Image: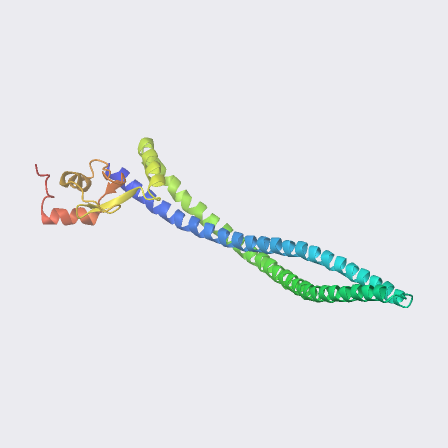
Amino acid sequence: MKDIIYALVELQEIDNEVYKYVLQKEQLANTLNEMKDLVTRMEQSVEEKQAKLVDVERWYSEQQDTLKEYNDRMGRIKASLNAVTKTKDYLIRQKELENLRRHKQSKEDEIEKVKDTINDFRDAIERDLLRIEELRQDTEKEGGATWEQVHQLEETIAEISKSRDSILPRVPRNILGRYERIRDRRDGLAIVEARDGNCYGCFVSLRPQQYNQCLRFETLESCPICNRFLYAREQTVEEADHDGPAPAETA
């Protein structure tokens, strides 16, 4: 049983090493994906701004047509004043002319503000497009280096996994199945040290009898709380032998 226990310990050490490199690979890929997502979001933002700009420019064009209509109407009224003989009709046309002037002035002020908005929109879109191009180039450059690193990590993982494959025959299939299930449920940690009467996975105090079993290597013990396999290091066993028999379970 001792050989099986230490085979599980070696297996855990290899899995920890593999996990470390897998985590690095995922972090690199996530960083690259975040950069790509940023480019995509900025492109969508620019598209929205461009759509709004089209709407504003359309409105601006329509208001220019409205101004032209005001000018045409004012021109016709002015031309008709010379032909008016009655004072009442003259005053009516003058009043209409004044109203048109006020509406025209208000419309011109409104159009001027919109013109400034259009220019600001165009400047913002131009800046965004330049920034997007810079980010795209950075992403392509970073992507090449990142995927090279990812490839190197994959090679390292594959090399380490060869050592794992050499250990698997030393572990019975049913125990290996339990090991994998525990590792999936316990954040990748399936076997932990039992030391000083405690489980070093969840730090619960073990029963003295179970701790003695761990020191003897005669059975494969599991923590009653976290269900992880337990093992004792040789140094721990030597210390226990030096100090005398391990404490027996009391009634």
